[in-house]
Length: 551
Picture 1 (cartoon, rainbow, N blue to C red):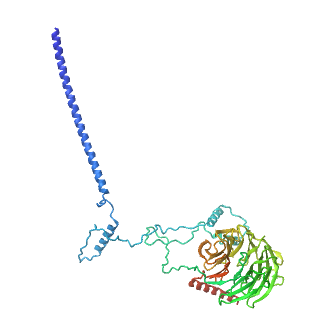
Picture 2 (cartoon, helix red, strand yellow):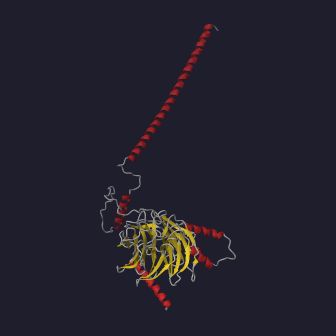
Picture 3 (cartoon, rainbow, N blue to C red):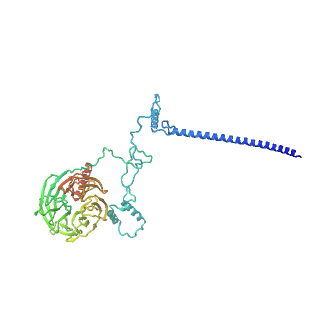
């Protein structure tokens, strides 16, 4: 084949190849363009769907946030439910023979919300009972739990009766009858309008407000008596009230009697020497005789009805600043720190001497049952002494307990009349505490900081309260609830420190004497007439039984 023929064949071949390549290229380009068209259509459709969904979401949010449009899918309003229920009940109460044109439209909001006058309960769960427990109950519970694990004693040293007696004496109750978990207090009544779906386990009938009586304690004294010449001495005991309603007060070297029933004033004692003065006073239980302690170390005994001095007993070496009676035994405390027991029936009156204090004995009280004598001194001590044994003479008494928690002079002493084993004591300016003692165990039951000097204490049995007189810095009288020692009331009016206070024989009035030379009578413990009649009826029935047994 010639060169021209070869070149022509090559051109043909090249043309065929170019034509084939061109066709394939165009075919691929058309396929690619169709592929891109399909994908662009898909992207457009997805974008349109996204924009439509976003528009729908924004529209829903806009509808929700638009406050003036009604919420179709939300719960029905409270007033609408009330209106629909009232309309339904009114339709049900119509008689079948009569037609009624009742408008069921509830789109208009009422002027006043229904049920507005009903009181919404302030506390939910008002029927829940919360027990109150103290440390003593937890100690008893711990003892009972540990006692169960102890092995039984084959030969008990004490009998059941003696164990019970010890338990009652120390704890105030039989520990065998104690509960491990003791619930105290009364359950509270549920608030008005409160409804509980649970089963009611208890109920309490509340007293109507019109029948509730609140106790009124006057802040002003019922009477004010003038006491000129009164010695402003913290350690002296210059006031006492007899069971015959006669108030005795010592003014310098004289003793005056004021009959609270008649209002008469009598001068009973006048010291012979001007430099001598009266230091202490104490009535007998019957109120017929008055013991007088003087600065010349003597103890005088006076017959009040005949206004006659019966005897003068000399045994102390310093002034007699405190006195206390236990039947025919008169106990006297001196600045020397000694306590003397006098048997007023015999000529040799001194039967016992107690030496437990190193400084002046300014507080002296026999317990109501006559078992213990409590003494307080300027040495910050409280001492407990036993009763005087029959037939004893010139013997030294044995000290039972010495209580040294006070940080100041202890003049204020008071025995609880309804709990014979409870003693209250008060400290001076450097202590300012009231302490409650269990004399059987020697433990301090409770303590209270009064922020003021405690000069005198007395229990008020009508409302089971404790009354305290204070010197620096408050110069007032405070009534405390016993045994919680929560403040009930304050009696203010004295311009000087209150030196002493005593309770009237009917337990309704307390008399206070202060350094401002006044005696104020506070009628703060009057009983409710209903309770008073019930108490008198109980006392009369008990006395009639006693008279019958004597006959």
